[in-house]
Image 1: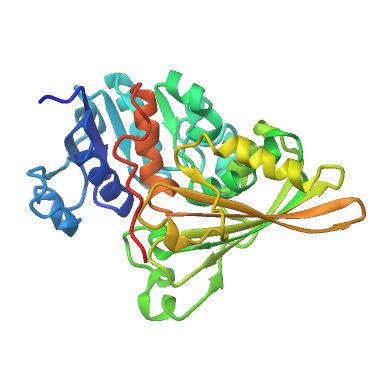
Image 2: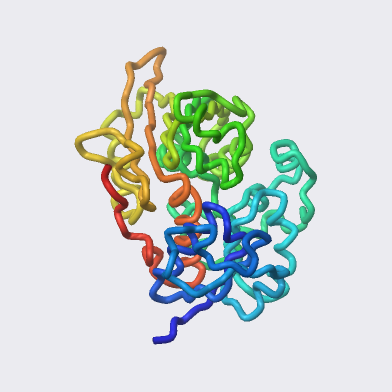
Length: 350
């Protein structure tokens, strides 16, 4: 039976590309028609993704963006930052909808992009034309859009942790965050930071207080309702392949009761298909690894000088809800489909 829509993936040989491919091959409504890459050209997809051995006859193709997008309903980009932006105009001209997993169109400020990504944006005229693809915040806007910039993995984790506070104007002033991430977030190319003999026995910080997701977090949470927000963010490299755990330390006015905060989280997240609040435990990576689910919970501290510490803890799989899975969720929305399609598997345990 023919599927309703056709999709292409550009940048399909990396970890994010592989996860998008896997989800598209399972999709009941969207056919994966072509996969473009500068690596493994002419080889089967299993050359880069051994889990796809015998699953598909598709091969990696070296294609210009316009040729990859020709005749497609949607194009999903798994390209690095500063590379994806150069492909976008050709895809727009081809008439395809776009889901971009890079950071090239998440920000509205060209100066912030240059500061945090280390280069001038090649197409600043297109900043602001992409909807920020956090469905739990922008679902209606995503449904009406043609171009979506999927959020970063750290940004998604932290935003979902504190979003109910921001929406109600309860997130004010300084918020301190520690985020712990697995090695797959650094991409498929080996590096000093992902070298197994040192990574597997180590914990270390990197990009301390200057991670590129900071401006994305500030823009998104301020737009959601946070007030006078400042963020101090310390990322930590952990001996994991995949998974991300963030703890955000916020101060809420003591006039806001514990019961009000619990009710806010329940109100916002009970209807959400991919956010859950564990009943008997705190969020943990192993419970969400391999899935598109995020776990969120809170721990309350004592009241000090009229303010209560709220520790917002959130966990997700950096490659799925923090990357490719959220990209598929956004694709479903812009195509007018049920956003859960090909994403409802719960992952494995342990």
